[in-house]
Length: 358
Image (cartoon, rainbow, N blue to C red; front, side, top):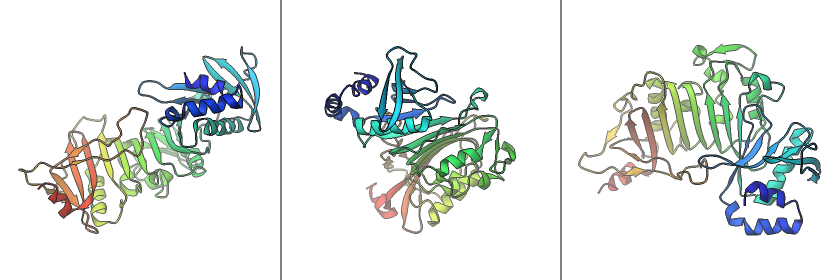
């Protein structure tokens, strides 16, 4: 049965709700639930899969009582009008208490172990009367996907929203806009992003504090993930890349100065002139496994699984090149492959790592 139907059936009676909870407990353990504003609309709620989402509910910013099959419920102290048009609709004003009340109902119905995510995109001009970014502090909200690809993004509004949110376990950020308004209202074009990087994304910014991050950015310098990331797994896609940032990153890791928790990093060049990744292995002091040996394969469980059925582990790294951290003699495999750079940290000293080859 569709999740939207289970959601509606759960309103019939408390006994039926308990039957749904008990009979679907195994199924519910595998799901992720997403709140998505689709770039301007009131958010909808769905369960992601590989090709399309299984819709549960859509919030409406208009009364739904003129629709067929409408009814009103007092849900967790909030009066909400429900209707049906393709999928269940929910309306109430103001909208935030409605979203929070339904979210608390989800926690009760689907279980508190379910992971919740939020997707918010830059709004089109016609939607500016609505909040530009959809951020609602909800229990168990562990991941957020943010799109900043408009012509002129308002960084003050974005960071004000982030500052009121907890530190997320995962952030997916697209920062490909050609210009931004900083927190003082000044316009900063893309060619000034590098010099203004720490003003746009301060070292204390919460995007650097997340456990895992996937980010698309025009310049490798902004945001400065290679300087300030404090988490475990990072994927960076960028158009403009400079080797100096990568060399500085590896040197900081080798010295033990930063990135102590890092497990996996991938940098991928996208767009641009299509050239391969620069050969920097000698510049980062890479060591090499004996060519007659077979290198071990580095892979780890992903901290963020996009949808049910997605691959559970990081892409394998099998490389003859590696670097060693001075502070604890830990090893990281390093691989340059076409337009990609991969960096995988082992939970082994250099001696333990080399004994794996015997």
